[in-house]
Image 1 (cartoon, rainbow, N blue to C red):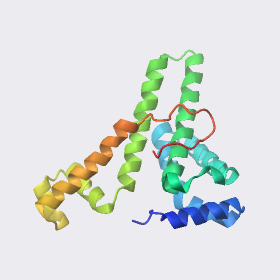
Image 2 (image 1 turned 90 degrees about the horizontal axis):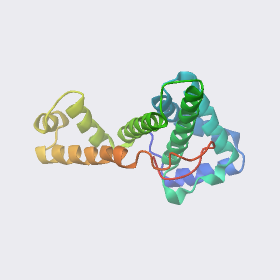
Image 3 (image 1 turned 45 degrees about the vertical axis):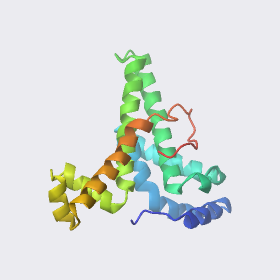
Amino acid sequence: MANDAPPRWDRRMQQRLARGEAAALGELYDRFASLVHSLAYRVLGDEEAADRVTRDVFAHIWEHPDAYDPGQGPMRSWIASLAQRQSVHLLRAAEAELMRAGGARTAEEVEEKVRAASRAARADYIVTSMPAPLRDALELAYFKRRDYRQAAADLGVTEDEARRRLRLGLQLLSSANNRAGDGDRTGSAPGYGRNP
């Protein structure tokens, strides 16, 4: 998969950032800006706000390169976590402002909106991050309405393998509901926590 970053790459990138190599930040931005922007847009639904989150996340990485711990997981996951946290923070702030201005939403409705946006962003991230064979099987099943037998034929694998891929893909996707909201209440600065 093109976006996979091996742990050695992650450690080397962190070291380059810690040394203040601007080229390292540029390389990191080229590799992950679209991920950050798409996650932010999924949560916020606003292009300008997603641009702001993207700038904020990469500024945070530049200012705090040691905040990433390669032992906790891939840099891609850490960056996605930063994006989700910052996006949720902005969403809460915007909703709070709307409530202060006389908006009709209750605090519970705001939190439900935040949880729903977090689940959707996490599901998007999981699908784009899963291995291509699992993603391909899920896309055939859900977007092209293929059953496991048809998916097996389209993928050129056995029916058992198609079922296995679908099952694993669905298990990964179900974690979007199980872990969405973990660490969403993190304050204004992007932080480090569980992988999204």
